[in-house]
Length: 156
Image (cartoon, rainbow, N blue to C red; front, side, top):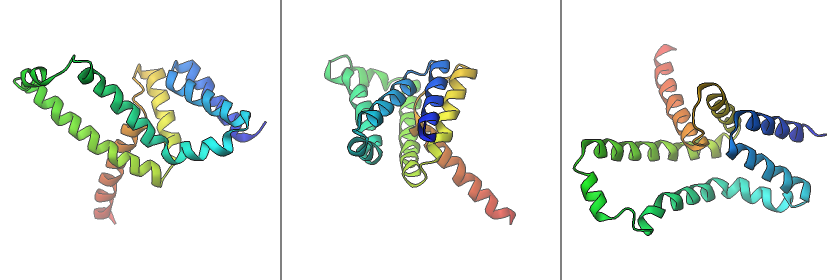
């Protein structure tokens, strides 16, 4: 058994232990693709376009209440009367901007993904966290790295 396969099986076991459905599905999908012989065709596409495809799927899910009529201009107008809505609006903008930097970090430094996955699994398993995915984690990591770089420039 190859090292990548062992690594993936360990990730699968961790996903099962942590009850992280996204990780279980992702690892299972990748192992099936690899062992079905389709890896040479599918894995490069997944690596190059996977993040964009995932963001598109999340965007579709977020827009469903608008297309179904659950959320419309009236609900938006009513929500804007609350200062909580303004906080939510600002938070949505901040998270989207931070996550955009996360995409760049994952593209330029893919090994960070492994640490983000382990951090997410640890948070789910130990701290009852929710797996929100590596994008926002990468964005927060990017932001923290820039802050650390900024302060370390003063020290020497």
